[in-house]
Length: 65
Image 1: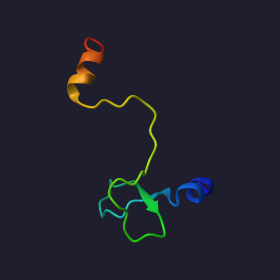
Image 2 (image 1 turned 120 degrees about the horizontal axis):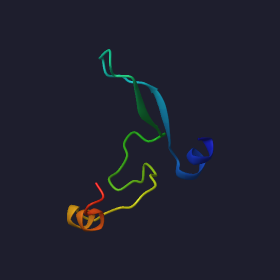
Image 3 (image 1 turned 120 degrees about the vertical axis):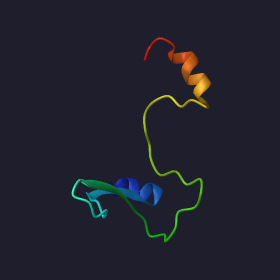
Image 4 (image 1 turned 135 degrees about the vertical axis):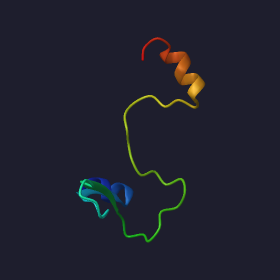
């Protein structure tokens, strides 16, 4: 994670949730020196296909669900 923080200026940390509920479990927290993150800032990576809208998704995945 230190490499991500050096490259992007932030990192993610999993730690106990701050939600006061017995089933809250763990949460994902953003570690950054900034007070606020501006709109459009890349915060995560996820492999997979990105669809622009549900119609495109349905056309590609018809009969596969």
